[in-house]
Length: 469
Ligand code: FAD
Image (cartoon, rainbow, N blue to C red; front, side, top):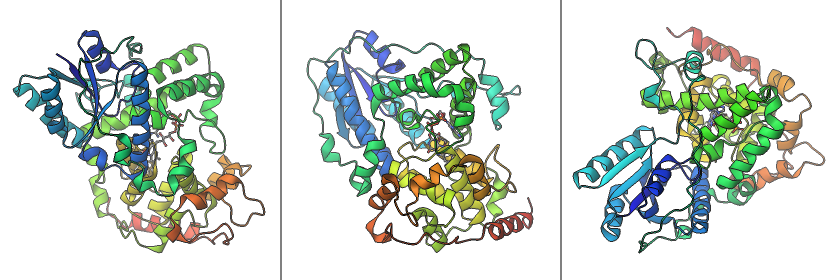
């Protein structure tokens, strides 16, 4: 009987333990994606990006004589229907670690098993399953450095090859049409602006990993901090949807390290940060929506999303060039450099004293590389409320940061049009990416700072000192 390969955030064919196991069984394989409540709930940009990824995976499977069957509805109900119409005897999938996915998958597994259907979950999204990394006393890690020490020497099995054959079933079940799902509907004007920045699919991700290792990783330990340079892997959107596996990146990084490439270890460390974020989310799912450190519940976060300051932050019109450049990069590309993410997050939570959840939600709506674990950890790190977070009193000064990390002003010039005689195409693209109702034009004056940086800093420090932490 056929095996249903239930794809979720593992949209690739190589280094795919679940797919490899299904193919090696010799039984027909039915690749299936279910558009269920969880994918419906995605923000505009991640949903748009998922739609592109599904189209690409469908083509890759078709090249192999297989198909991607698309269905919409409750996961368990869809699986039951497909099992009934195809006579499938098993469902395979790659594990996910957020609480909603764990609940869904546990229910699916139990029900299928009760009905005599084999249900198997596999690793693949992570290198280190969160429950396999333990402190000496048997707990989980809350601080990155000891976590890193615990995992960096581990054997990570070599990546699996793409299955040479994906056996087709005698009859294919019906499939929805991807276009009918309109997964780009909420992107409005931005979709055409963002689309050229998308690195879509497995083949493109592999090619980027190759060129990153050939040309960039050598100096990555320094270039990764320079938002005006092409100095990072830019593979997060592919890792987020599983178009490339962390194991493939890890092995490439290990090879680069053996070749003596200086930045390779730093790259491995960043991959471990991703694993650490999942480790934290698995062990303390409250990191997704509550102050990880409970004492922060008492902090006077401003939670009013309609404040003019928040609007200015969202629009990239705070009058602070580093913050505005980064927020505009987000609008145009669906991505933001890590340095930018740290600075806009620090500015929102400290200079504006807004709740980190406001920023987390904005990123969730706008990032094509949105990842639940990395985003939550990043925001709580920046706000000071997370485990192993930057202390609240260490407040980034966005202007000093500019002098350190964007000395030549390449980054700010690239993204800010106002006040320039000849703004570049990307700075102008921002005006095509944003909602018309914002009423912005490149002829506007560049705004004065909405908050004086030292006043904002003092206000935040006062609030911090006056709390009883
Ligand atoms: P590279 O520098 O090439 O790093 C390689 C990979 O390592 C990345 O693709 C990513 O998977 C992982 N990685 C790197 N830095 C981090 C980090 N600090 N934390 C966790 N994993 C990391 N990353 C996301 O993938 N999705 C998010 O939604 C997200 N939200 C963030 C929000 C905030 C406030 C902050 C401060 C960081 C956030 N990050 C997020 C982490 C980081 O900014 C991005 O992973 C990184 O910028 C992606 O670019 P890259 O692929 O070129 O990374």
